[in-house]
Length: 257
Image 1 (spheres, rainbow, N blue to C red):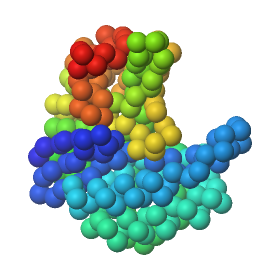
Image 2 (image 1 turned 90 degrees about the horizontal axis):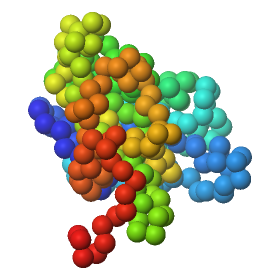
Image 3 (image 1 turned 180 degrees about the vertical axis):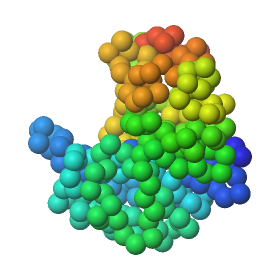
């Protein structure tokens, strides 16, 4: 089994006996909250649906790592109208659609169309990979995989151009867990883990190279993540190295590229 990000897209392809497209954090309906805050932004649902339909070129099964919807704790009127048709269209394009519940997905079960499989936030095993959302502890079954995949954090890095203008860029995080800490709770420690960036275009993310950034979820809060082996990658594949060492540096000038 191997995993490979789709170039320039916050989506991961998991290849084994089957091919899975893995995305996280759609946050459908977030525009309603933004509108209440004074921002008139159109729904990102059509854009995300079009992208997910196009990504069937990479895999024929779809795994969504939580936070399909945005409102907490219940389902809003807009989400009730918007989410079922989107999932029905995805069911027509993918052989399987599996949703791992996120912390924003309260009440989602009630509006899922027939055929969509939903599992708890503790996750699911996809062959030799464990996948969970990230807001609660993964299950023992999930941790028995050699690879661990999660969402929830919306990782990003803050960079600046030569004029000092800052840009918050989505990024992948790849690293290892601390075996000794993991084995205090589980019987097996995955060899590697990957954190998937938010799929919603409006969510740039949590800056992992900023002192104001936060790392959420029990794996980080309980020091199970080995920060020395953590690496950040931009969506285009650029390896930025260890997040704590990624300065808010200027982008390279044209003659440096």
